[in-house]
Length: 562
Image (cartoon, rainbow, N blue to C red):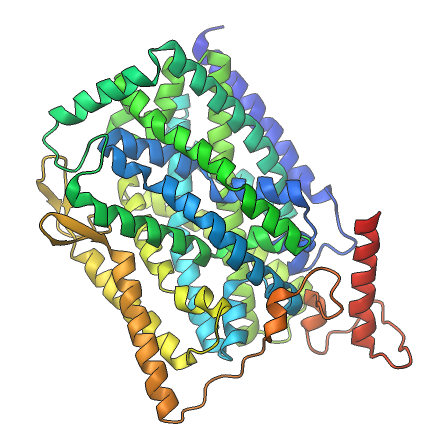
């Protein structure tokens, strides 16, 4: 067999294994009643330490991360390293803020940011606005995952549209059937394959001159280019843009709908905190992948048809042993499919809980909600696939940059809302609209330039806004500053005018709730008027709802103790 045949053979076999596991995930820790959005969308909130660890890595550290980051360092050098410090910053933020989000969501049965915002500020309209913003920002994010998958498939030899559509169909069916359990189980496979790929990459670098030669040759290459922004070190004018991009990206992570899904599936607060503390391990893997961009540059790796997203797959093809290359291709492919699945689930949850149920069918049962979310998740995935087939792949990446600026405008409601309910709901809506308007206007006005500084397109050329003297600033941060200014000013004016705000349905102790709390509510307990399949008899001195809540806590406590 030729090397190419071995590569393809190993890749196909591993993807077949992934397919079987995806279909079988529905039986993994299957609940008695799987037909509810809580079970389908967040795995029944019952995942332990290891499952959450792999699921977070699978959903947040995606193929786009492992493909696009080295592509950036290959193309422009040090600026591509922005993903590493931003990933590090998210660790303490996750430890503090996501734990609070888990507690309030667990006590009230929330599945999405938008539900929390609606309850926190007493405004279903604000919740709907956050949901729509999140869905619109998620679609291009799913698309760029599929762009990364398409780059891998092209390198393997599966060109054209049908391999991508086939892969999307497979992951759609798995997700439709198994919900969050499918990406959770496949995340274990992905991390095992990815660990092997990284180990192989380290050995390859050592065999071909090591990092000393890598940095020396890469530095010589960047010194010979006409561009003023590339290089092994940031240019003096690039510090502000780099810093604001890091901060903006770190904040945006918390606002994406899929960022909350994995953590809400955790069984208790301790699980959330342990996994937040362990996240820097993934940062090490991300840093190594970023360095591979320099290694590919030093070895003269040429991307397929000029598409920088194919740099890592081409590096794998040229320098990995054929059987190991097949493993690496499978790792990158699974790393694209898992976040696409989680993102589509999160977007579907947001639609169902903040748009469908409040405005279209208030009496929807848990089973109906789950069914609606299943179909919406299909729409999200195939809509993203259609997006990248209809436009140039490079433009899909630009859409993701736009999505980052858009989702950042929900930070005052979703992120700051975990700390305070001071903002007026109308002020938050005004700030959201002002931030979106300013951000999109700035993005539209940024021209696209090539490496020589020549303008090749008049609009949507990136997310760095020029501020003079060659310096730039991340558009998302500027738009967020406008958003906050409008929200604060509007809140002050509305308070002075005596305009009543919404009623905060949460309380301070909600943000500290843990598993076993008698006040915790499951999703089906929040549906008014829903007939109970197994009614609980009244106990003297205790209401039926208290008995139900306590019994759930007691059963979980007993299970954890055993």
